[in-house]
Length: 214
Length: 280
Image (cartoon, rainbow over all chains, first blue to last red; front, side):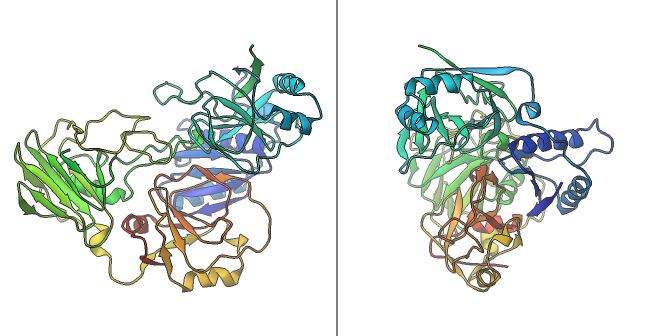
C-alpha cells in the first residue's frame, strides 16, 4: 500500500475506492491493537474517505515512518463494499419520501417520482465515510446508481433529518444547515446525539437500508 | 461573569478520536499555552480553561481562587491591582478579575486551580465553533463552577507564552511539504516560500486565511475529499492558502500543500488580520 507523510503525526494511505478505504481502516486498527504481534504505535484518529485513509495523531515522525514501512510491504485484499462492512447488522432508516427534489432525481434515474422512492428503498447502502458535520454519513449504494448532480445554488437551510442525494452518495442532514444535495425525503431518526453511547447512528462500514413510511 | 465584551470560550485539549464520525477536534488554539496556565495553578495540563479573544472581561470571584493567564500580553487586574502574566496569582473571595485588550497578539488562556467544571461532550469540555458541540460562548451573567483544586505548583522555570516570543516582522510558520504539493507548479511553490502573506479578517478558530501569491495547479483534476490534519495548509480554488486550526473540518476536497508544525500553530493563534506571515 502506498502512503504519503502528512506533517509530523500522520500518513495518508492511497487506495482505489471507498471499499478499499474501509478495508484499510480495519487493517490499521488491527495492526495497532495491543493484542497483535509487534503492535504499531496507536493513532488517535483513523479517517476513511473516498480514495484515502488518514492515520492521524501518531506521537512522532519515527512512528509515522514505522507505519509507512509496514504498510509498504502489504497488499490490501480485494473487497467489495458489502464485504468491507463492519458487521452483518443492518441499520434501517425510516423515510417519508416527500422531498422537494424528487423530480430532479426522477429525471436522472429516468423514472417517475414515485419510483424514486421504490428504487431507493430497494438499494442496499454501506457507509463509506463520515464528514462535513458530526454524524453526516456518506452512504454508497452497493450497486452503482446514476450520479445525481448537486443543486447549482445550495439551499441556505436544509432541515435536520433531510434525506438527500448527490453524486453517488446518499446522506442525512444531522442538523439544520446549508446544503446543495437533492432532497428526496425526511426521517425522524436522530442521526447524531453526543449524549448517546454511540453518538453517530451511521458509522463507517455500517450497512444501511432505507424504508418508506407513510 | 460581570462583563464580557469579547469572545470567551471554554476550551481544554479537545476531543480527538471522533474524526471518523465527522467530529472536529476543537480544543485550545495554543495547547502549550493552556497547558502552561494549568501547570502554573497546579492543574493537570488537560483541565478546561477560558480562551479569551482580544480581551475585555470582568469576572467576580465568589470564592478564593488561584489563576494564571498565558498567551497574548493582555492586561490582568486582580482586585484593582495589576497582576503578572505567566504566573500563579491568588484571587481573594469577592475580588474582581479583569482582562483588558493586548497591544499585540490575539488570544489568552485563563486557568483556574481545579479547572472549570462544565459538562463534558464526547469526553471534552471544549467549545467547537464549527459544529456547535460543547459549551456556548460565555456571556454576562454566566456563573462558572470550579472543580476541587490540589496544592499549588512548585516554583519552577516555565517557558514564556508563544506571543511573548513573537518578534516584529513576518511571523515564520514552519511547514512540512505534502501530501499534495505535487498538485502545484514548482514556480508557484517557490513563490509561496519566498513571499510574505497577509492574514485576512475572515480568519477564525477554523483556520487562518491568507492573501498573497497564488498557488497554481499543474492540472484541472478534482481531488476526492480526504481526511484533514491540524495545521494542514489547504489551497481552495482561488489559490490562496489557509492554515487549518483546531476547529477544522475533518475532511476537505481541496489539495493540502503542506502541514504547519505544532510549535508554529501556537503562533497562528496570535495572528491578527493584516499581520504578515512567511512559510519556511
